[in-house]
Image (cartoon, rainbow over all chains, first blue to last red; front, side, top):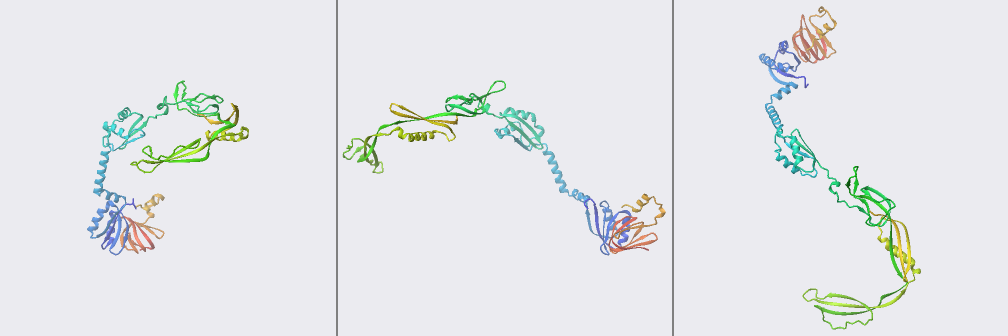
Length: 377
Length: 86
C-alpha cells in the first residue's frame, strides 16, 4: 500500500456508468465499487487526479471524499509542509556553519598533569571552543604542548567532527630514576650462618653457608646491566640464617636476703607549707626497716595547703637462704628457657637447644643456647 | 494494465481470426477479465453489465467491483455466480 500510490474518490451523482465510460477513455481506473445508487468510489493515479476532478465537476458530480495514499502522497505532503521544510533547511544551514568550528575540547590520558594547565596553554594558542577548525595547526599545537608541559612523553592532537581531541601520554617515573643513590643496602640483623636465600632484586654479596655478623651487607642496592654499568634498585631478598642465641643466668647456692618480719609502725604528721605542725616522735624503734610515706591533702584546695603525712615503718630481717644447685636444676633451666622464649620471634624455627653449666667463684653460671632459623634481612 | 490476449497471441503465434470482437476469461469464480468492451451499461454490487460488439455481457454475483478499467479492457472481481453473453 505504501508504494502503490493513488488517489481515491468517492463521488455522488446519477448516471455513473456513462461517467466511467467517459473517464476510462483517457485514464486508468481501478477499484470501482458502487456503494449505493448515487455513491461510487474509485481509485486513479495521483498524477491524473486534478484532471479527473475537473472532469467530474464538469459532469455535475459531487466529490464527497478525496484521499491520497502511498509514498508519493507522503512525499508531496512533506514537501508542502513549508514550516517543516524551512526548519530542515535552517538546521542544515546551522550544521554546515557549525561544522567549521570546534565545539568541544577533550583532553585524555592525564594522570599527574593538571587538565587546567593544558587548557590554559590551548587558550594561549587561541584554541578554545567555537574557534575555527582551519585556524588550528595541529602539529604546532602538539609541539607547543610537549614544549610547555614537563613530563609529557607523547602528545597527539586530532579533530574528530567538531571535537578537538588532545591525547597525552605522560612520562613514566620509575623508582630507578627517582631514588637513584637513595637506596640502602640490605644488612644482617643477626649473627649467624646463612641457610637459604631468595633474591628478588639487587646484587647478592653472600652465599648459602656463609657466616655473617650484625651489620654485614647482604644485598647491594644496584644491579649491573649488560654494559657493566651500575643501576640503582631497591634491594629485596628473603635471607634465612641459622642463629645461635644465648641467655645467661647465675645461681648461688647460699645467699643473704632481706625480708619483712611483719611488724610495722605508723606515724602521722600534719604538714602546712612544708612545716610539720605536729610534734610527735618520728623515730622508729626497729633496728632495720623500710618505710612507706603516703601524703593526703586535707583541704582539697590551694588556699590552705594542709597535708596529712602517714609514714609506715616495716621491720626487716636478714636471713641466709641455701638452695642446692643440683636440687633446683630443673627449675632453673625451665625459668631461663621461659625467659629466652620471650625474646624470640613467633616465626623463628627452633632447630636445637642445650644448656651449659659452669661454676665460677662458687656460683653457678647457666647458659641456655638456642639454635634457630630466622630471617636476618 | 496488461493485455492478456495480446500476450496469448504473441506466445502461441495465433492467427488474429481466432479471436472474436471481444474475449472473455474467467478465473475461478472470483475474477472475470474482458477485452474489447464498448462501455459500461450497469454497475452495482450484484450485477455488472457491459456492452460489447453485437451484444451484451452480464456478470452476476455478490460484492462485485471493477478492479481495473481501461478503454478496452476491464477486470471484475467478487463472488461471481453467473456470466451471460446476450
